[in-house]
Structures are given as structure tokens and as C-alpha cells.
Image (cartoon, rainbow, N blue to C red):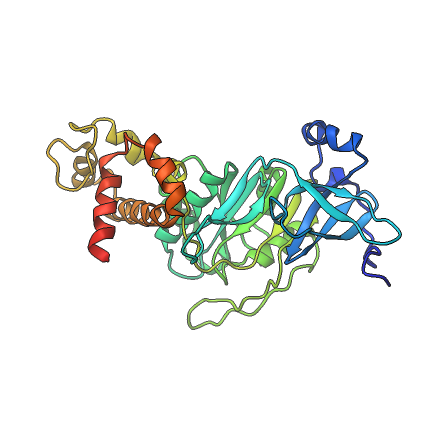
Length: 361
């Protein structure tokens, strides 16, 4: 079998099953005139990618010096194979949404985990104590991507009061549906299938039940699941690569490895959406640049005092803002210089976060 031939599991699907629609067809029109073929990237490695086309799954070369490195979920135009070489990636179509996390590198541009995602499922296990800060961070990442988050509480059969847990999580997830599910009893799976739309990605720590959830959506044991160590509720990394699989009821599942450390990257708008009630209260503060720390006439602190907003929630907001500002500060200095010009009106709590960073040095 040559490296350019189709996989043995030639998929009985068309590109429409992988999310191709009229808008993509329209965006692709200039490429079609040039004899290129449309494809969706299933996974990308260094120098090559696996992409699904109407003819099957192809291995395409990514030429050195390619302007944009494709990621799982990207739509691309491929140069067809010739007698002397296999298909080659030509263009990556402009992304509608992208899930980005910060990376550890010094000139961090952010790492795109998945492209053209419509729904982000944030999986939260009810079998272990809830970590709302982590849920808030994942929601910020999801909102920032441009996709619609849905919080899915898993393992409801191992929780004494799932409805109470759902009410608690709904408080930290304004604007997102919160669904209670159990793989054991099948609870909530119909509702989940009904709210999922388009390309779906599952986010959550190892052990949150993402693969089990994925298998239920797929209706088969397609994704590897690993036993969770009881002691700490952490699953071993069981998903070795991201995969794109059409769902039986329409839509596509994009499976990403269990993301342990999701750092925020330039997620300011995502944070505003995640902490919508704090942003709303902030408009009532006496000072427009209120940092909600100890300023007089701060509506946010008043809401914390009265118990309307939990102190934990404000602390989490401050912590994620600091983290986000720190990630932004580490992006390439040249890029930053360009951005500074446009950011003259930067708010005071971001200034405070820069001071915080300077103290850390």
C-alpha cells in the first residue's frame, strides 16, 4: 500500500458529513477553478497531514515554509496527486472559529488546538469535588474561540444530588446550557444530542469522562477509555491523537487529548463572557477603571459583601485576568509594540496585572 493510497477504512461519508456547507463551498470557489480539491484536516503532523476528501482519507504533504500550518478541523485546498508525488496542501481556508491555548514558548503565539468548532462540550465529573476555577478557565477558552459552550456534568450516578450540583455549576456558566448525564443510566444523553450542533469538541481534565461521552455520541466504542485511578480521579492519557468522526445524528466529533493545563491566550472577550455578571456589575462602579480590589463605590465588591456574587468567583476572575495578561505580555515584543499603539485605553485592572507581573520578576 503506497503512502498516498486511501486508508483501509475508506469512509462511506461525503464531505457534507464532515461539516462542508454552502458557505465553505462559496469560500472554496476560487480554488476549484484552479483544479484544487476540498479536504478537512483530520490530524496534522510535522510535514504532513491526514485529510478527508470526497474520495477517501488522504495523506498530504505540507510543503516547507507553508504560510499556515493546518490543525485538526481546518478546511483546506489540496493539489491532487500526480504520478511522481502524492497530494500536497495548497491553502488553508479562513477559520470561522479557533480554540487557542497559550504555549510555554517565549514567543508564544498560542497553539491552535482545533479549528472550525461549533460546540465546545466542557465535561465536568460529578464523581469528584468540583473545581469551578478550572471550569471557568475552560469556558473562557470556549467563549473566546467563537463556539458555543455546553457544560456536561458526567457520572451523575455517582453524585448524591446532581440537580443541586447543576444549579451550582450554572452559576459559574452564564449563557451556557448545563446538562446532567450518566453513561451508566443513560440519563441526559438525548438532551445532549439535541443541543449539539455542527463540529463538537470535548474539553475537560483526564478522568472527566470525555471518551465515554464521545463513545455514547458515536454509538460505539470508538475512542479508547482508560480506567481512572480512584485515589485522585485522574485518568491516564488515553487519546493519543485528535480525530474527526462524523456523528450518527449529524455533526462531527473532534476528539482532542485530555488537556491538563489549558493556559489562556489573549482570551479577554472569553473572560468577559464567562464572568458576565461581574462585567455587568462593573458598569455600576463609581470609577470606570475600577479594579474591584478596594476602591470606594465598587459595585462588584458590594455584590460580594451582600452575598450576591461569591468571593471565590471574584478571586477566580482576578486570577484568570492576571494569567491572561501575563500570557499576552509574553507574546513577541514586536507584536506587542504594534498592539500598544492601539491599546492606549487599556483598563486599569490590566495595568494592575502588569504591575503584578513586574513584582513577580
